[in-house]
Structure formats: C-alpha cells, structure tokens
Image 1: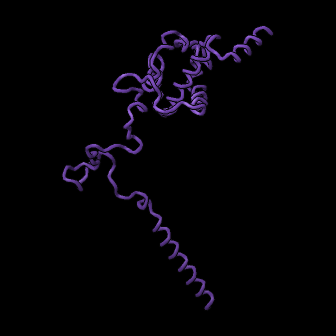
Image 2: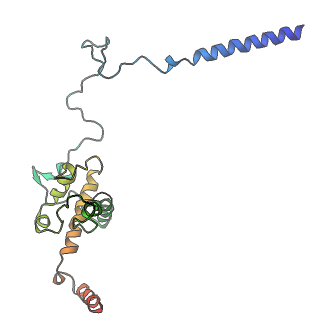
Image 3: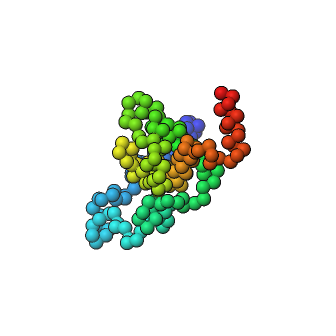
Length: 199
C-alpha cells in the first residue's frame, strides 16, 4: 500500500516538474518586445522606433580618407600613379584576381577575346589598343568601380586594393605584349633571338 502511494507521489511530482519545464519553453520567450524598423513607437517623442543617424556618422569599414586609394582619382582627376608600391606580390595578386574576374571577357592576355566573348557577348576593347595603353591607370580602377558599357560595377565583388592590383597587372600585360625587342636588356634579347632561330 505504501509503495503504491509512493509511486503515485513520484508520478505526480514528475508530472508537476514536466508542466513547469514545458511552461518555461513558451514561444514568447523568443519573441521579445522590440520595435521593428520604421514601426511606430511610444518610447520616443517623434514616435519613430528607428533613430536618425548622428551628423558625421560613418559606418564601420567606410572611413575612406584616402581619395587616391578609394576613388582612383587625385584632386578630382584620374590618377596616373598607384596609391602604394607595386611589388611582385601585388602583381601576383592582380594576376589572380584578373584571371578570376576579368579573363572571362578580356582573356588572360587582355586582348578582349575571352570565353564569354567567344560565346556571343560584345567584345571589349583590347588592353593593347593605343588608347588604353595611354590612358591613366586610374581609368582601370574607375571602370572596375563604376562599370562602363556592358561591364557592370565590381565595387561589391573586388576590394579597392585588389582593384589596384588588377590595374597594375593590366599595365604589366600591356608592357609584356607591347615591348620592343630593342627595349629589353642585351641578355634577354639574345635569349629571345636564340628561341626564334630554333623555331
């Protein structure tokens, strides 16, 4: 008799414990009272839940004081120089980013005959044209930033330093494709002449 009573008490306590535990897991624990954006609120005098930005507020990661680095311009004109030294690491990074983002249209050598063009898209101007060989280097940064013609902006896809690295690599492509043999060091001229004679 006592063991039956003890069993009933244990079952009853277990039931009470389960009810308390389930009551603590209600959905409104997840739905805390908070205003949604642009919802009316009685908390502030202007009845807006979203607060206006303070004058001069800049979002984290958007403090861009270096006009040259972030716009490709110096005093409002397209930059003719790079905002940082162009090293072999910068060129390698530029080649990597170029092959990912640019080569599908411009091709790996920059002649504008990339795979997408071969499948019917309008051909972009070759980087080796006289006009693009003479244009300020800031032009390439500006086009990647703002887009031009069929090319859309890459501002959300490529960081500013990588856009500059690509511009540096484009300049390297232009130099590699347009160099005269006489401009090379004597040793390189002889090496190229020996290769040409073998072929």
